[in-house]
Image 1 (cartoon, rainbow, N blue to C red):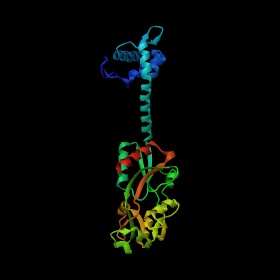
Image 2: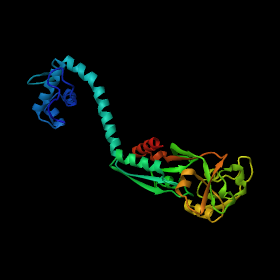
Image 3: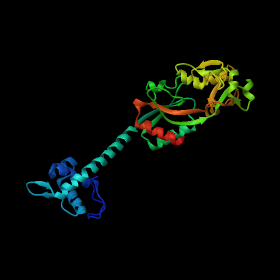
Image 4: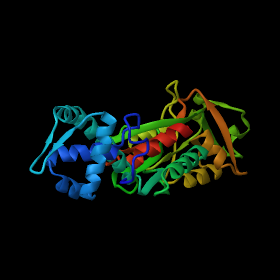
Length: 306
């Protein structure tokens, strides 16, 4: 930072921040020795920087005698106009430095269901942009979509919507897909090319157990068809794998988003698209009182990937 000027010493040269900083400190101290001490440079270097700035301006900014140092009227004018701009510039740099420090460390990302290509792409983009931050990925139980966030075990999580939790922020929403019913290949629905939602009245639905909120459980396994017909309740499960296993065993059907169905394809399960239901969607959520620069930056990467 303390090297020579780069644009020539004349008025045509570009401004040097070091010269401006030196002038502002000198305007406060009115003493070349104390100015050098604050800037960690020699007194002669302070004089050199001042002369260089005066050369660019084209006039004297400081009157110096053996007894005192004082600003000229032009120096006073420059200080008055320069100080707010310099403080704003320094503040912007300090803010960027603070954000950069906030990117270091670990970002704990939870996911529910499947960490599909969009999530892995977002993680890769985040790691490329912020190599000082390590991303840890943890699966969130199907039956407890928000618990890890509330307990501070993860910084952010990808969960199935809806999200109506006090204190949680919903960020990017993505992967809006038609819902799919997972059933045993022996089930009467298994050979259907698609299934109207009204037919769910003939199939017990496997659902998430508590502590998942009641509103969230109802969204994943509704109790009524769109026409108001009751849908039988099937077993309650704590994990996605448990639900798929019970579906394969003929204990009921399980509604899944299409990417999750594709990811968990197996020979003893048929995945039948369901028409007439709201789309399934994923969202990135985090605690409002624990929002960090890392979380915001990862949210931006998810939004881009989605």
